Image (cartoon, rainbow, N blue to C red; front, side, top):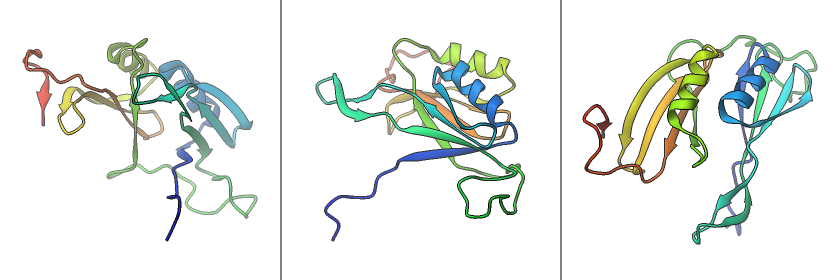
Length: 164
């Protein structure tokens, strides 16, 4: 029996332009763009810490995200990478969820993402099991992002906001 569960350390996104993808998330979500292996593997640093039950920063820092070159996915024992060397284009794929900071807004994030080539998947939807307002986009490299604000569900929401 494990004394401690395995934990999620990173989520990686594939890209055909790692630098541009890093710049996209730096601008759209405000994450620091750390160019670990220029053009092959970059790390995005959201910064800050998870909030504790007392509403203050806990000792647990936010997770990091990696961006890798689809043509040569690092890390891998084969220096030149292996097939496939293209982005996923059809069907469902993994998505990440990003909680919107109180210092930011859904509208700004969605507008910035769209301005930089993202496809908006939906707007203004309450996901009641998490009690949060969600919007979603697909970045120019086909990675999907759901942004949400916790505790945004209330009976007096505008009629154009959908719920499930």
